[in-house]
Length: 408
Image 1 (spheres, one colour):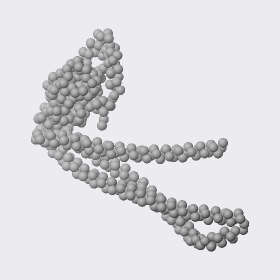
Image 2: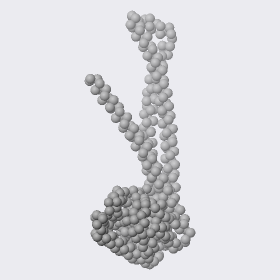
Image 3: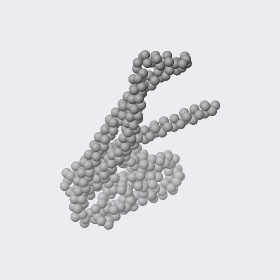
Image 4: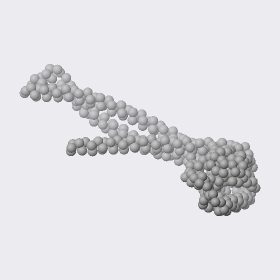
């Protein structure tokens, strides 16, 4: 029983070592895959913003829209350089690891060669068949003769195995050397790529500085635009608050629902499902990026000026479709100065608000599904931008849409 217990422990030990090795190997592959995916996403972001910038260049007017896109491309370029640096760093650790393995193999090969050299010398002395026969016949008795015979057999087998082991070690060493050269070449390519991207980044930062300088000369116009946007935002906020308050008032009179907003059992399930999808909701546009974040933040050009956004601004392509982010009912369609068309969709106790739409494809009372087209985003040609203003509310509380939308 004691022997069996020992064997089981030994088996468990070897299994745990094997699992650790497999886990490390799997982690290494995952790390490489993650680094490459991040890099590819950065490259896609740069390509997308480059396309948007080409469209703005056609219009010579200096604008905040062009600055927002350029800022996004600079951020994407910086993220790409960081991704390349991470890859270079990881490859550096791989080179160190392979170098250690190569050194270990070289040391093992040297020792094997030394041992094999001694074997060859001894075998050379014993190569004469007469000497082998004499070695056997000089035995004291049959048992000693048999042992000497077995020794000669084992020695021959050992010599063969030693030669084979040296060949295998040499093959392993050659493979590691090839792997090392491949990894080093990859590092050289990445360093070259980093240099190229750094040059592009420097050029883009120069463009950014020049654009900022031109925009600062239009400070009066920017401040006036900001005042208008603030008025539009305040008007929309009041309208949304009024709609939500009215919804709560109607719910209090209703006998069919429950809670502050009179949710039916189906609406309650819808509301809970919506809440469970935080961070997984589809974007209201197929393409685009957040050009102005939620909450209070510094103005991109005007010094000492802070702006507040009750949602997020999504810069997208010209003629971009606007989509519902979740199943819900279209409760209101508004037409407002500075915001063009506004659609409000109710998802239980949640409300999604889509502003700055050029066209509307739905009507009040329609039940829409996730990703269903509800309109097209307005393009302001004078400002070189196609921007969807998107808000998310839970009752009368404003939510940060960036935390709810799926993150690429």
